Amino acid sequence: MTCELWQQAISARIDDEDLGVEPRLLEAHLAGCADCRRFEAAAEMGRRTARMQVAPPMPDLSRPITKLNAAADRAASWSIPRVLLAVIAADVFWFAFRDLLTAADDGSTAHDARHLGAFSIAYAVGLVVVVVRPARARTMLPVAAVLAGALLITAVIDLLNGNVPLLGEATHLPELISVFLIWLLAVPSRRRADKQQQPSDRRLHAA
Image (cartoon, rainbow, N blue to C red):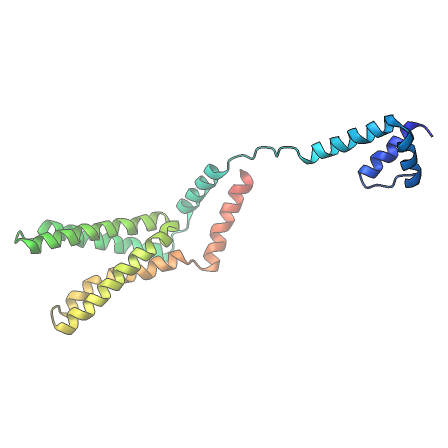
C-alpha cells in the first residue's frame, strides 16, 4: 500500500468515517512512517483550527427593531379604548387648564389649585402619549392606578365627612375610567395581539 491510501484512512478516522483498512494495520504503518505521522498531526491541527474559528460578526439589529416597534405603534389600529382615552385626555386637559386660568388669587388655596392643575395637565399629556403610542400603556399603568386609588380613597373620606357633595366628586370619573382603558391597552386581547403581530412579521421578512 502507498502512503496515499494510508493518508486517506487517517483522514477518514479524523472525520469518524470508515477507514477502509484494519485499524491495527493503520497503527502499524504509522509506527514506521514519519511522513504519515506528520500528515496525521497536520490534519488534526487543521481540524482543531476549524473548530476554534472566531465567530463572524453579527449585525446590530437593535436600531431596525426599534424602528419596527415604533412603526407598529403608529400603525396600530384605532380601537375603542384608544378613542375613549383620547376623549378623556382632552377632558382632563380642558378642566385642568381652566382651573389654572380661573384660580382665584387668595393665597394658599389658589396655589394648591394651580399645583393640582399642573399635575392634571401632566397626566393628560401622559394619556395622549398612550393614545399615540399604545406600547407605552404598561409604563403609564402604575401611575394611573396610583392616581385613581388616591382619588378614590380621598373621595370616600370627603363624602363620609360631608366635605364634598357626590356631584363634585363625579368630576374625577374620567381619571378612574382612564385606568381601565389603559389596562385594556396594556393587556391586549389575543385577537388584537395577533393583528399587530402579523404586520410586524411581514416587515421583518421584508427587511
